[in-house]
Length: 127
Image 1 (cartoon, rainbow, N blue to C red):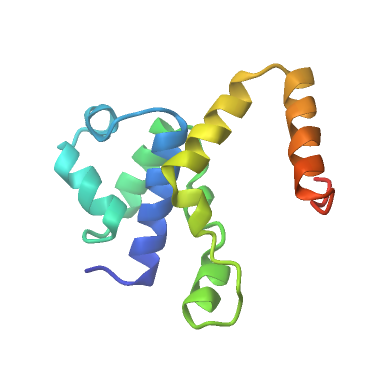
Image 2 (cartoon, rainbow, N blue to C red):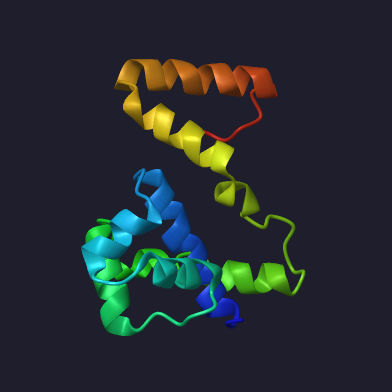
């Protein structure tokens, strides 16, 4: 199994692929590898080379830095320094909700966000 950084990159890879609604096979074909290689990247079993990370970033329409976002926080989480782990973003249900949210127009999105805040008791910070 790969180290913390490989696992972190893999989680970001899976999250973005799912957000775009791509299968492992579709992403693999885009970057010229087999879907099994994408599986190994996503679980952190195989390390992603710099060149391949660049290809994946291009295919997923994100900057390379996207894969490293939150790495410092994730490492602190692994050491138990913070309570927020970010695992909720790895859940399929969360990704489905985010995908559906961005399919809405701006006004329905705002109304849905206001509804969610009111159900939570209005304690969510405005972004």
